[in-house]
Amino acid sequence: QGSKLEIPMWLAKGLHDSKRRIISVELPKIYKEAWRTVFSADANVVDLHKMGPYYYGFGSQLLNFDNPENPEIAQTILQASTFISRFRRIMDSSQNAYNEDTSALVARLDELERALFRAGQKGLNDFQCWEKGQASQITASSLVQNYGKRKFTEMDG
Amino acid sequence: GDLGPFNPGLPVEVPVWLAISLKQRQKCRLIPPAWMDVEKLEEIRDQERKEDTFTPMPSPYYMELTKLLLNYASDNIPKADEIRTLVKDTWDTRMAKLRLSADSFVRQQEAHAKLDNLTLMEINTIGAFLTQALDHMYKLRANLQPGGSAPSQDF
Image 1 (cartoon, each protein chain N blue to C red):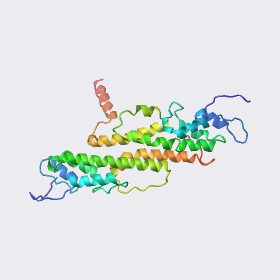
Image 2 (tube, chains in turn orange, cyan; image 1 turned 90 degrees about the vertical axis):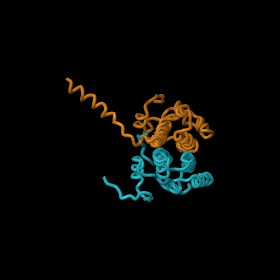
Image 3 (spheres, rainbow over the protein chains, first blue to last red; image 1 turned 135 degrees about the horizontal axis):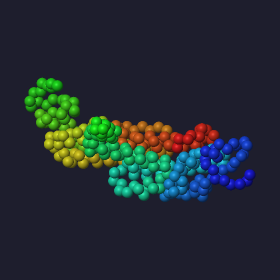
Image 4 (cartoon, chains in turn red, yellow; image 1 turned 180 degrees about the horizontal axis):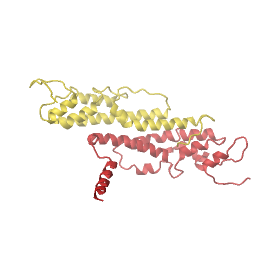
């Protein structure tokens, strides 16, 4: 009782009960007010990967625990402070062929943003592939290529 | 199979795939569509740059047709290189406008948007990205409802 422990999120959720107060959760600092102010100043500079690569997902899970700061946290995660303000850069750099080095930007994205970035890149890559005429080239599936090799050795042995 | 009859010297309309096929077999000359012309395309490009909305394109397949005709029949198309550049410029302008639109849609957290005069090519290039982003936004918005959404594990 009264001691502080680090436990996994799934365990904390299981133990949590707003009526019985078995545990109370302390917010990781990136969700606290000081950091929230940084986000509202300029969310784009923050290295979300370093601060906890599942910022959005974890933050959303945190809202399960009755914390008086929850509305502010939810707003920050979503709002002009974070997802929305970082959205533009992710979109522009993933969809633009002229962007030389995106690795610096991607390094600062959390996992959710990285998945989004990859979706944007894929859209661009598919377009470029079509433009080069590669879309109409038939290539052997990698499964079939291996199959051919095995069959040959079966005939030998 | 059998094709025809075609009368030599008389222009005839055929499906694009057939035109390309005949052209590859050197059996015909292709006539580009009326809009595939430097002046017309300059007009379109300029309008695209000037307006905030999307210009109605002369064909919903302007990208596809340009690519096909310039690849297989550039000898039948006057000023082919200029045409290629003009179409690419127009495409770039339209895509930039689309991203601008997407960004303001996300910022204002709108529920609906209506964009006229987009072609499928443009929609498909940005589509997967945009739908995924909006999906995330939807889930994050659900966070704002107190005790509303059941906590989801699928982040």
